[in-house]
Amino acid sequence: MILGAVLAGGLSTRFGSDKALAELGGRTLLARAVDALSGVCETVVVVGRDVASVQTLPDWPSAGMGPLGGIAAALHHARDAGFSEVLTCAVDSVGMGDDLIGQLSPAPSYCADQPVIGLWPVTASNAVDAILTGDGRHSMRAFAERIGARAVRFESKPANINTPADLSAAEERSHGL
Image (cartoon, rainbow, N blue to C red; front, side, top):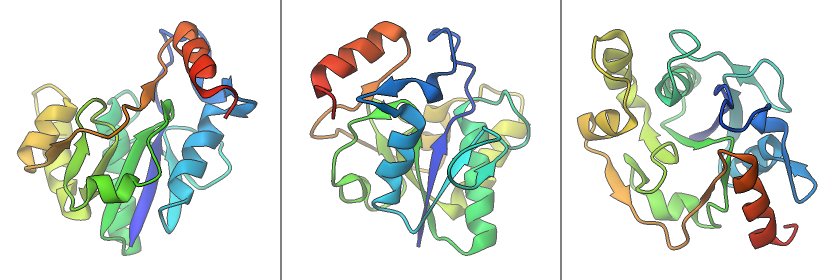
């Protein structure tokens, strides 16, 4: 079983407002991310927010740990709930494609252009915990390297919306999808 986890704990500093609630094609980025994972995962959670349309989890071990804090929380939850893998994406990952699991299988793997989009085995929880509680940098690529994850080039590069200009460009490309 695969748990879907939308990573939504960022501060949206480059965006200037709560990016998760920004709309693309009349739907919030948060709703789009939840829907994208709901189509391929048995259960979806949102990590790093208090309120969402699905169950929410706090980052682990605390807020402000970056994407790895969200991945750690999702891996812990998945392990405790009997899931074997976690599929992650950022709240602003748009256009990940219809065959997300197929592109990333087998785990561990991640999108080469956006390493927060990844398929992680729950056994990776020890590795992410070690990084987050250690003195080094909390790097997605260091985590991926530590667990031997493959970098996957997606057929179509997902959009990464960091600024209002990125949102406008995604709106123009999607024509309201």
